[in-house]
Structures are given as structure tokens and as C-alpha cells.
Length: 184
Image (cartoon, rainbow, N blue to C red; front, side, top):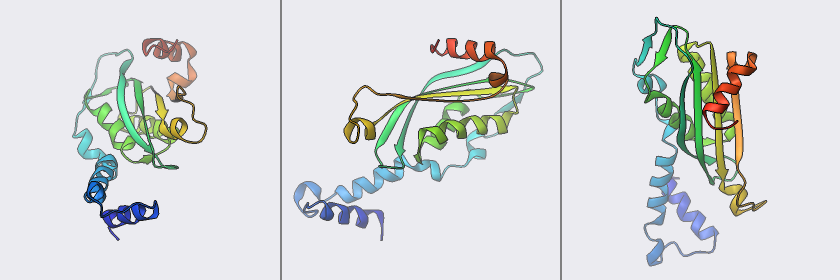
């Protein structure tokens, strides 16, 4: 059964008439929206990075890309969550093109997700590609499953982090990262 046919059945299951004027094209629109929102399943990491990893012969300080917008869908309720991702790394001989980090965030966020796994996937991918001295990822997100149903807390926000290497071992490095992203 296609996505469109499944949406048609969901509408019927909700007690709606999927053949009424306002819903006639809804199965098609929902199917297209879901395909767009989960396009991370069809993306390829190597194509995203596209050889934009460069040798870095000079000693670099911390590199941070902050406030990366992210939109994802909670795998438990299939409701959106959205927020910001902050990624930092301490290079060791390699750096990556600036646009590649937000694209890596998109690769993993455009799937059915939980925020905890998403945070770790981004950190582990940066670590695998660059083998840096350390990686830190912080995600701040609002979950519609917590706002619209269940606990119904309108102003709640979830914050997750994954720190590796020097960010885990060295408190001052971790604190510098948190200060630079505005979290301390």
C-alpha cells in the first residue's frame, strides 16, 4: 500500500470522509510532505561531504557552527520537534567546509528521530570524518508531542549534549564551548 493509500485509510479511521472536497488531495499532499521531511533516509554522507575535508597544517582553535536550525519528527508520535543545533570541534590536521556541518545535521534530523540519538549521531559523524581532538554537540528543541498532547507543557524545551575527546576530558574546553554558544 502506498503512502497516499495509507493516509486515505488514516482519514477514514479518524471518521473523516477522504472524498470530501477539502480532503481530496490531502493523501497526496501528506505523502509528499512526509517524503520531504524524511529525505535524510535517501541522502548519502559521502555526497554531502563531497571531499570538502581539507588539510590544516596550522594550529587551530575551536571551530563552532552555532544556531543551526533543525526540524525533525519524533519517532514515538510522529509529531515535529524543532530547534537549534550547535556543533564545535578542535581540529587535528583536518577541517571541514562550513556548509557541510549544517548538511550533516539535516542528514540525521530529516528522519524519524529521538533527540538523544540525533545529538550522538552528529557528534560521531564529525568525529569519524575529521578525527579531531574533540567534538561537542548541543541541541535545544521544542517537541510538539510535549506541547500538544501528553504533558501539554507549552514552554518546555529539551537540551541534549554529546561531548567527545578534549571536550569531555577538559572542563575549561567544555566551558569555553558552552560560553561561546551562549549556554554559560
